Image (cartoon, rainbow, N blue to C red):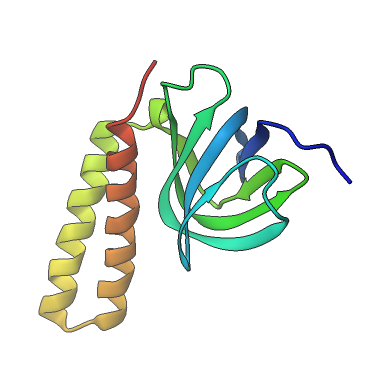
Length: 145
């Protein structure tokens, strides 16, 4: 049996490689089944994640929460290692606010055009793009350098 500890390691991986790795006291994610907070010594589990922020309370500098925007993914917890594999992950400090604002506007315009054209598939695709842009803008608000 693994010994109990007061922290665990969080790592977030995207196709571009390792995006984030720190020891943490807790990590909050949005799974497809709802909000989930992982604490040290959590049971082994795997779950799918929504387009949402990952909020990490690091072991050091506990007052400075780390925010990472992900476009969905998979989370695995095992032996005080939490790994998130996401097709896109970006730390708050790396988000380009102007680009995210532009993506938001483009998605909103695409949604309006899809409504005019009565194109349900295009509407849903634009809706997902809007959710991704809003997620980045939300995470950007929590940046600290």
